[in-house]
Amino acid sequence: MNLTLTNLTKQYGSFTALQNFNYEFTAGVYGLLGPNGAGKSTLMNIITDNLKATSGLVRFDGEDITKMDADFRKILGFMPQQQGIYPNFTLERFLYYMAALKGMKKADAKPQIEKLINLVNLQDSRNKRLGGFSGGMKQRALIAQAMLGEPKVIILDEPTAGLDPKERIRIRNLVAQIAFDKIVIIATHVVSDIEFIAKEVLLMKRGEIIDSGAPHILCEKIDGKVFEITADESMLNDISAKYKVGNISKDEKNIYVRVISEQPPKDFEYKLCKPDLEDLYLYYFDQGASR
Ligand SMILES: Nc1ncnc2c1ncn2[C@@H]1O[C@H](COP(=O)(O)OP(=O)(O)OP(=O)(O)O)[C@@H](O)[C@H]1O
Image (cartoon, rainbow, N blue to C red; front, side, top):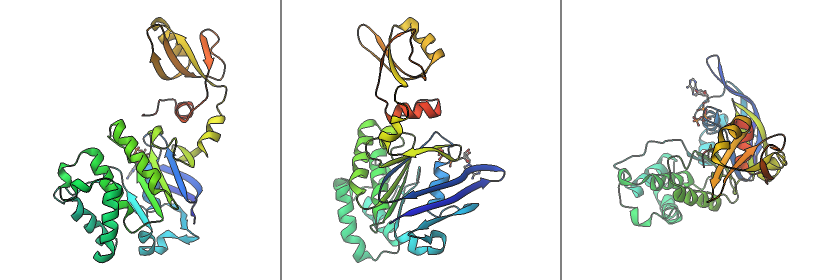
């Protein structure tokens, strides 16, 4: 099973939002990581056939998805960004409604809906209106609808937007559970959403892939460039003027400042650190990622 993007380009007037994008996805979780405006939503909308590319092709197992039309929709699950959710629908009604939109028969939908309500752990809320759901419950309801019809390709656009850390972990674990034997693509600017579950990460900037690969391989590229400086408060301005600054932590005695630098920060007391994806994000995007 593969989903292949070939020379995908999208222009909004004279503005190029996606530039000659090429990639092959096979079963597993992929993280599409980039700052606001990188083109993630544009790409997601083209892959889901909700937006027409200016040029290029998206193929599923060799077939052009725009020609597959309804057949592609059957194998696709999509959780769009900030989707309006029907506030007066109960969860159960919402799922039956979404199943009908996917062309599923009620009898086929029923066992799946039962299974999905359990999977997203909303058994107690099945007859409650979505309007009264918390942010995390809404996101879980949206993941459940994306799973209807047992899709082979699942696209999640910012699945943890607006959630607290506990809810984010819950969503992340859920994604890891559903990913078996499917292509799951998650667009996010939250590194921790994908750090431990993504088979490959695509780093996007201004509509282009600037790097991609398994997280640990990507991180190896900045081996020797991540340091922790032991500092006191008076040094902070100096440190941030000289280096890209990541996490700052503190104990009773010192402040510890994680920095990215081509050269060791010899004018300070420092130790070398093992790079993680958060560091890589900072390295490429000059700004901290959301946690
Ligand atoms: N309909 C449109 N018309 C004109 N420009 C657009 C349109 N949609 C998106 N853009 C521009 O294209 C670029 C990419 O937008 P896109 O929403 O794909 O980025 P993103 O990485 O998903 O960002 P975010 O995380 O903010 O959603 C942005 O500069 C945006 O302003």
